[in-house]
Image (tube, rainbow, N blue to C red):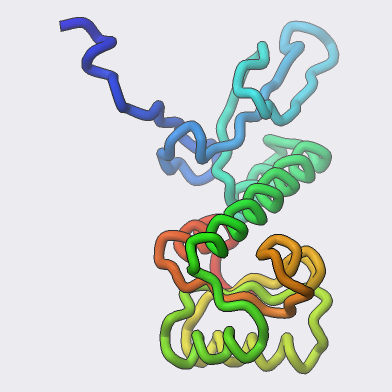
Amino acid sequence: MSTKKKNVGRKPLRKCVCCDSQRSKSEMLRIVISGRNTEVEEAFMDETGRQHGRGAYICKREKCIDSALKTGLITEEVAKDCLEEIYSSSLKLLSLAMKSGSIAAGEYSTEEAIKKGEAVFVIIAGDASDNTAKKFKDKCSYYEVPFKVGWDKETLGKQIGKAERSVIAVKSEDFGKEFFNRFGGNE
């Protein structure tokens, strides 16, 4: 039996250099180091996955990128590029969650979702008022719902096709798990 037939439907797995977890290639960021035999080595993020050079894979998680930066595996510029990729793909994920009906947007709807136990992950806008941010951080802590403070109200609203939103609750287990994997627990 040929190897082509055995591998049909399989996704290639890669190992993260920071946390040693194995994930599919599409869930990882590829970092390429080129010019290893010359005086100047250059590290950069490979968006295509096909650039020449020695490659290493890092999970699409803030924690892994911070770890790679601290250990010197990547430069600050590469870390910035990786974080931008994570944030932009997360906004796309937020749009998909909205289309699937897995979002509660706005203060009232988000508060209700948290209280009813429907919220799996909460996103609080970085420019939300201090009272709103404190209220939802406290609610999430009390009800043990992970949250992320990030983006701004306009960006969050635009991604879900609404006006500005200070808070958004993700109600789907799958989408919530993906956001948790990318951003971790509470800030």
